[in-house]
Length: 242
Image (cartoon, rainbow, N blue to C red; front, side):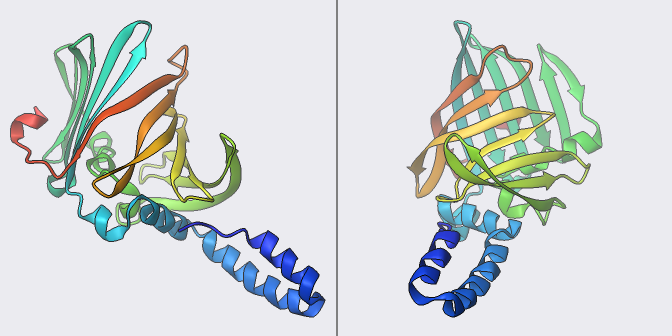
């Protein structure tokens, strides 16, 4: 749902119709501002922008592959999100060799690095649950996240609604949604750095960002990850999560 230019419309009516009518409009518009600045409504606008609630809820799983170039090396990031069975897998390979893999299966989390398996604490594994959804935003409240509207900011030349999203463990992430289109433009947190989302394209009726720009203190330069494959509702097997 595109957000209206409330201030402009109110001032225009004031100039044409006079102060009394303008005051009535402004009171009405102020009420609309409160609704549009409600975090739940901002999330709802985002879900509508990417395809609508019914379409988004129909996505039971997704298999995604992205590629990035870092200092001459090709980095391949594969993600399988399976909300239907509450499991996920994400692997990072460099030059064809898997360097790191994160798994969530049966409520238990694992991190595999260079062949070494590390079991994740229960609290850490629980933080992976949102990643089983392609669009976890729709389930924030259900999963115990709290949302706060923090005003608007400029993101790459676009006005964006800024939300503070607090996870059940207290970790805060800032998310930015375009005022005009409703689409998510960026997320940022102390733990993961900053990820920008752009080049939205339609895939099976869903608008999906095909370019992710990752900024992190651990990286000397921003990393651009381009989606080369996005598939929804595939037939998955246990071997996909090993």
